[in-house]
Image (tube, rainbow, N blue to C red):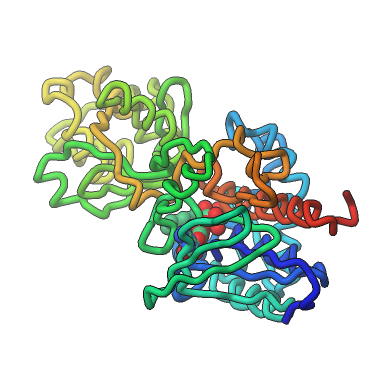
Length: 412
Ligand SMILES: Cc1cc2nc3c(=O)[nH]c(=O)nc-3n(C[C@H](O)[C@H](O)[C@H](O)COP(=O)(O)OP(=O)(O)OC[C@H]3O[C@@H](n4cnc5c(N)ncnc54)[C@H](O)[C@@H]3O)c2cc1C
């Protein structure tokens, strides 16, 4: 347990951000770290992230890496100075989990899962005497230091801390804990909050009943999506609502903005990124004989039944008899999105506490020792490891800020 005479730090939210801050702060022998979460177990989203392969970070150079944080890239360049992608790899290794680089440059733990990493992490935090208070839902803070929680049994609990880190996550996958319910209470503290919006999410398309029934759940691999000069290679999955998958996630921000303004938006889908339009046209100009169009497309261009069906979904029938139009359709099929999936099913959320409300060390301006980190902050980044890297880095920066605030930072 803690020193008794030391400083008390409360961290609200035991996701990766809160856990990283707890790890940094609990190294100080004079700090007692108390970690609160309203769920009965910690880091539920981190565990879910491990289901499809936990992408911890990315191997690209730091200049390209920080560009992924768009208008916040200068800020994140500083945060990544504190906790870099290499630090992420060393962190996992110190927990006896080695990592590997996938073909896309993404970094994963061997075994791909989050569970072994989390188990080792929690054991370390236990060794460092971090105290967990689960089933405690943060309600508000009074007089800058008295945190008010409601327990699962409906009891109100008060907790006094010398400094607080809020790491309650964004607003996506709310059933795992990050329900965004903190927004109202934070606004009451005078903190400026940009509305939470879905990011890295699926989009809606008016599929025909036939197409939806036949292809829901089918993967569309190695395609390229283009929108307003941005072109993204990747994969998609056909859903009953439209598209999901890394290619469309990467464009979620400009597509979301366009949908907000125009109600619908059209992007180009390249079904054959490895071939030029001329090459596609050349292949299609071969005599077809008695072959059906689908067979012809399969033989000449290796188009799958799904790819051919997509062409039929979008292109007018007469265009199939025009080699030029068909080639253009295969290389730049104009798919219209009519909406986006709600925040509940988005990988992450945009919006949150604005950086203008915070000092460089992520303390809420005008407060004494209240800090914010992780997905609660107003930033967004594509999938590829940039989300967890951003959460770990801001968690470490805020933890240093707290140590400095408490007069315990040796480096400051
Ligand atoms: C399906 C899926 C896959 C993903 N895969 C990846 C990936 O491979 N790589 C990657 O980089 N990112 C991935 N992400 C995103 C990544 O998991 C998040 O960005 C990250 O978990 C955010 O960390 P956080 O600690 O800031 O918030 P969270 O992980 O959301 O944690 C917030 C914590 O705060 C608690 N909390 C909230 N409100 C309260 C309250 N009022 N009182 C007490 N506690 C509260 C919650 O219960 C939760 O434990 C994925 C996300 C999803 C949904």
